[in-house]
Amino acid sequence: MKKNAAAFLGAIAVAGLLLTGCAGGAQSKADACKVIESEVTDSAAKLQSGLSSLSSDPEGAVTQLDDFADTFEAAAGKVTNKEVKDSADASVDALQAFIEQARTAVSDPATADQTALTDSLSKLQSEFTDLGTTCSL
Image (tube, rainbow, N blue to C red; front, top):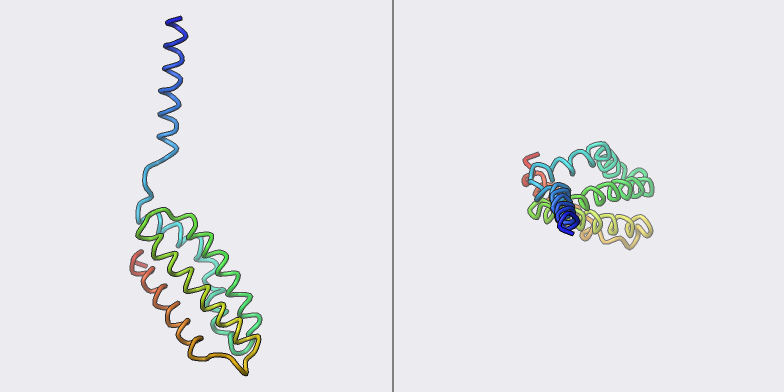
């Protein structure tokens, strides 16, 4: 009986150590920023291209922006560091708001609210600048 109890307690101790190792502690700011940077670097060209072609190919631009937003949102979802997470989430929200304004402007250019579009772009730039500052990029 004592042998079974010792084996059981030993198994619990080993399981506890394994789970502790899996938890890995809190995500550092540097690690969180690396997640964003590595996930988004390749698709950043899509964002730039989308913004550049907004007037010449509006529908294509919105598609490129949607692709970038999907990638960026997935990257932000992998971040657990609070400081970086807050900044990344604010950037995601600003990006989605801008895309929505752009989509509205593309679907009906005659009634597009240019002020809202410009304001949402300014907010997007501000949030991405803040994220860059947070991550020292």
